[in-house]
Length: 330
Image 1 (tube, one colour):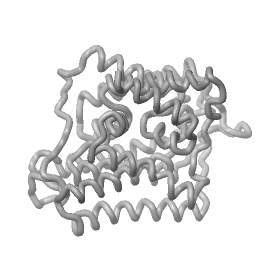
Image 2 (tube, rainbow, N blue to C red):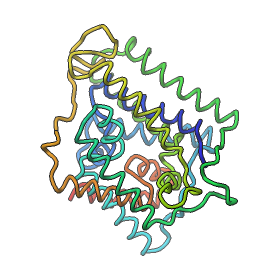
Image 3 (cartoon, rainbow, N blue to C red):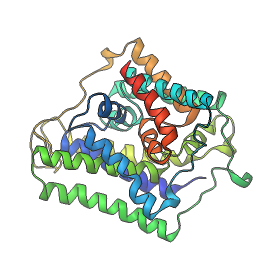
Image 4 (spheres, one colour):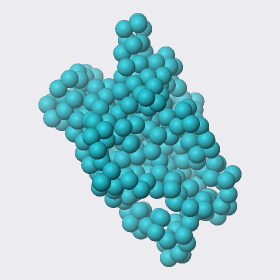
C-alpha cells in the first residue's frame, strides 16, 4: 500500500545518514562496497557503518515492530537454499563490477551530479523495471485493494518516526559540529551513527521491503499493483542531497556551514570522493549494472536491505550473504 508519511520520513533519515557521512567524514555512503569490505577487507571505515546499519533493526524491533517488513519465506530446501546463494552471488558480482548500487550511484552519485552514476542508475533501474514486469510475479495488495491506495501510520508510529527523524537532524546539524572534534575517534563514532540512521531509514521508508520495491516497478503492466511510495525517496532523500551538495560543494574548499570557508569536512582531514568519470565506463561496468538490475527486479532486494534482512531472517541471510561475499570477491 502507498505509505506517503512513512516513506517521506524514512527518506529524510536516508538523506541525513548519507549527507552526514559526506559532510562530517568526507566519505560516500556506498553500501555495496562497505558491506563487502566489512568482511573481505575490514577496517575502521566500513565496520562501524555496517554495525550501525544492522543496529538500526534494534529500536524498531523492540519499540515499533509494526514497521518491520514482512519477508517471503526463508529457504526451506536445498533447492531454495542454493537459489538464494546464487541470487546473492549475482548481487555481489553485479554491484562489484558496476561499482555501486542504489545508495552509491542513485542517492550519493546523482546527488554529486556524477554523469557516471547517472548512467549506472539508468542502466540498473531500467533493467530492474523490465525484469520485474516480465519475469517477476508482482503480487497484488491484500483484499483486492489497489496498491496506490494511501495508508497512514497510527499515532504511536507517527510519534516514533517523527521523533527519530528530529533526533537525527539535531544530532547531525547541531550536536556533531558543536561537540565532536576532528579526530579518528569522532569519525568512527559518526560512521556508526550514519549507518544507524540509514538503517532505520531503510526500514521506515519501505526500501527494505522487497514486495514494496517490486510493486513500485509494477507501473508498466498493472497499475493496480503499483505502489508509488518509493518515488518519495527521490523527493525527500535525493533532492535534499542535491541541494546540500550544490550549497556546500564538499571537496571544493567549502564546509557544512555556508559562508565559513574550510578545506576539510567537520571530522576528517580530507575528502574521500570517487574520482572515476564517464571515461572509466567499460563493458564490465555496464554488465555489472545490468546484472544488479536483474537481481533487483527479480526479488526487490539490494545490498543494504539484504543486510537488514539477514538480521531479521538469519537462514536467508546466511545463504544470501555467503553468495554476496563470494560474488564480490571473485
